[in-house]
Image (cartoon, rainbow, N blue to C red; front, side, top):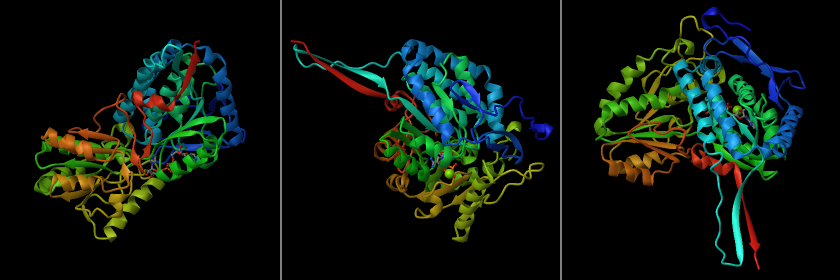
Length: 490
Ligand code: NAI
Ligand code: MG
């Protein structure tokens, strides 16, 4: 496979799936092309798994649960995860450039993501041997205590916006708890997750403990979530697919973690540090071209500083150069023609309904990348709360500005969608910030720095943003179950 020399495709990309410690083809022999979204050219291909392949992967994960993995001590599990972190770091540049080629994201962001992926393995490595139960006092005639058991085979359905990092976010705590895993990366971005299969093996993970299958959502993802031997499904993606996953898992009473995106507000009160608020707002909406579940896609700003914010945000947006991720462009392309069409459709619809476009609002044109899926940084100004572009996740570089007259109205507007993933607030008044944090309906609150936190901070949603928590110690609850043992002594 090759594209033009300027953005050379690394050699030896995986072209098979990773099942039971082996590289294997799909039983159908069908393949999926993966493309560079900046140019539209094919950079690689991987198998299109069907339900037979899914059965094979789940059978391998089931067998591994009772084999060598069961005999591996928690401390040994931790050492395998720590070695995985080290191996990811050793290959960080290769992994990042492959992730940039497949996803379009700027290389500095991909390098950050790969480091975070390593960080997940490192963090959960330290937890593997520290999970312990309780003893329950029932008086002298009884002894009662709890043990944590791995839930079993876990399925991980991964989106295309953060390929390796989302894979690591689910796989690392699952393996730390002693579970086994079957991972299905997104059909647009499977290469780095496939590479993780081999890295885990090199780190000493027994065959079958972590299997990686590639394929389309309905066929491969559907068969995986429908499999009766899967005990838990961790899903990140759209609300519609999340509901399907939950219904499918319900048929065999598997638990689910659903991380379904949002329409997160960045609230800027009149007393905010404007420089910090502007910088935070730009990062909130333009990171990964806005294709971030926790993107700050609504700026909820006090009328007193609305003009001052716009005077800075508009020129900063217009100054952002679109380009190839491997050239570390400020803004890369969207993932696909479909996603570009979706984003453009939202903005065109808003324009037709007379929403004011402060900047952008059109396709991006980049010389030499005519086949790419670029969209210009876009700000829609003073958008009513009931507008579709305020209520629905666009998943592109499109910021909706909502103007308010008081902190109370800011809270009401922040809570005014069906989503509840993140809420950010900028104010110098820490009491006000903490009151907002108390009252806002969302899983995370960022005060005076959008995206504050990291691997150790629990992450998940309320309302249509889903439920269950990933990251931090909180994530472990999805991957172990509590068994209570009580003995009568006399
Ligand atoms: P999607 O939710 O359909 O896909 C996410 C993952 O689920 C992929 O691995 C896909 O293959 C898999 N999948 C699809 N259908 C499935 C099924 N029936 N059973 C099991 N797995 C299935 O999202 P898609 O189509 O890639 O993007 C559509 C929209 O979803 C985006 O425009 C964006 O708004 C949102 N989205 C949100 C994400 C987030 O981080 N919360 C990530 C990706 C997309
Ligand atoms: Mg879909």
